Length: 156
Image (tube, rainbow, N blue to C red; front, top):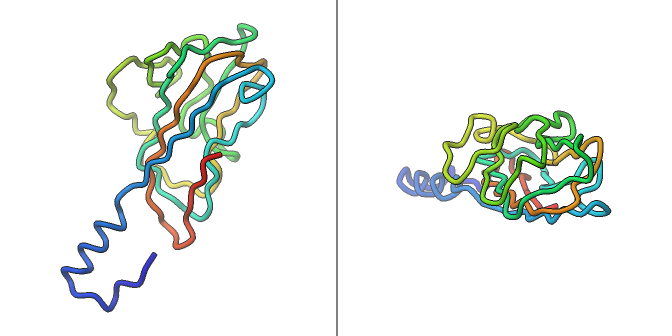
């Protein structure tokens, strides 16, 4: 963050408003059993420093299919794999759905509290468990603002 101590009051206000405009990054994931749909952690956003997640919205662009009926996917961080959304079944994620809770919501939504105004200082990940997701596409929309001077987000 830049030093604004030498600016006039009006300039400080303008600088703070400008500096606090969220940056939006989009990570598109095309799931395949041997690739991004494999069991384990999938890094969506690499976080340096501390950020405030203004909102994190997963959108199902193409219906997800799974290799077996026991697959789950959660959205969180390395230390809290379900920080944003608990383990959910991919077979319920149909094209046009926002994935905001265990049961996806279609079309228009009010952003749930768990997906906004969250302080994060580690990578944001999806965790696929038990089996694999064999097809489908998610777009993850992350709007964020820096909290620390070294804050940065890189699409994973």
